[in-house]
Image 1: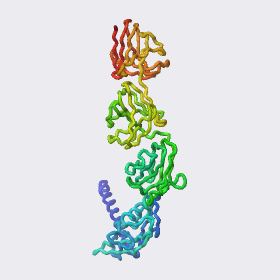
Image 2 (image 1 turned 180 degrees about the horizontal axis):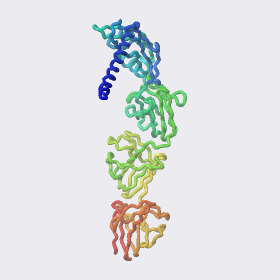
Image 3 (image 1 turned 90 degrees about the vertical axis):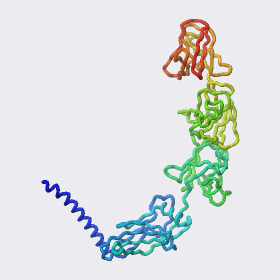
Image 4 (image 1 turned 135 degrees about the vertical axis):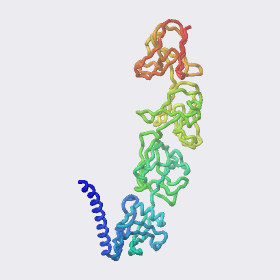
Length: 472
């Protein structure tokens, strides 16, 4: 039994070695009997098309050639060159080793070599030559060279991988050096998508910053793009007649464009800067507004606003070259284009606790200052919230509110309005000197309790969340 265990691996290895030697001998025998080395191609004339960039453009096939009965193996090298170069230093060689009899090139591979390696002119027919060199590994080595085959080929000019938007309908205007770059579609580098705010006016596209050409303009029918590389005056502009947010999709291969109103905001982030804002003019730390979950055009800031100026950039870039929302009047705004000289800011006249709401669809801005009311069994109005006592706002600090007057033994808390549904925000008790903001609808209901009737001065600071209760 033990002899079988020893002999079996040995026999298996011997069998495999015999099989390989037999195969190699068979192959060498076939080579020795084969005819002359010859080369052929799947196509003798090709017009390349970028739409088929990943497809096979050309396949070379060759015969084994012969080793003349020497029993030697043969390796192969395919050479391709521009016709007339005679396989000089510009020839491209593919060393393919032994037992390989075919080589394929994709459309994009072949086109890239035609334009960049051999300097073919795009859209102009040129000729390639190809041959196969067989090296017979005998002693000494020998070589056999196939006849030369000729392939006529027309390369294409690849569409640009960069595209920029210019025009007085756009946020950057006609400034060629400050054009807006479009985003290429992940699944197709020839497709670009842009979503953004447009004013009434014109626009077109360029492929290189700072250069008028090459450019893409409007065709003779809707949905058509026209490529222009020679005359900038012949680029027909697209028109925006109704300001708003638009989605633009372009396919440079199909020379197609789609322009449609887009029911999404031009920006997904809005910030507030200026002396009135929490972080002043430190734009790199600008306070971000909150985008509404149900209406993405609505952005809000809720918190303390100081006395002073403010405006709304769309990012925290420290170069101050970004778009911003700026003042038309107290309740309307416009999109300031980054780099433009206009600088129209709002001015907040008094420190306070505010809710600031921007609507990017109708370009409105609303500021609502928080007021504070007083209700409860300890107050003169008891629990009649529709008659809740409005506390007196401090003359200079709108975050400080005071009530002075009679109180009875009982409870109290501070709603921010007189809504009778009791679902509003309220300031409620942490302890006798501190409070928190209860959000309307939440179940918590922590009230202060007075045990003695009398005249009181009660002061609430909604910035510091502090309370003082002083009996007179």
